[in-house]
Length: 130
Image (cartoon, rainbow, N blue to C red; front, side, top):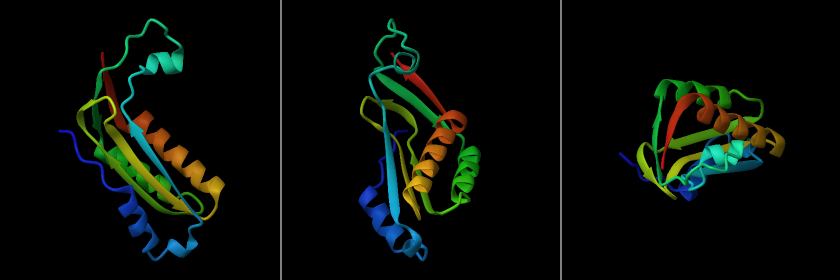
């Protein structure tokens, strides 16, 4: 069942109201969406790959919980929030929303990259529909 993505503006307001907000010098967000270009074409240059018309998306809640714990434990990271969609998604639909807040830019960028990579590589199943 496809879900409604939460408001990033609301997430930022809530993050800035938390007790650790004064320690955060940067918030960085990632909004992943379903794209028409197949993964095989983008990553492997498989030129004969058909365009994507949608995606089936599922995720493992226990693995995601562990990934969030790991991201929150990174040095200088004081805020981590994640939303994941599920079900059959169409082109342009939101897959995920991630918000990371921390003390300095390099740590926040690294934490966002770590968390999105972990989610995409270990916690979700993305089946492209052609």
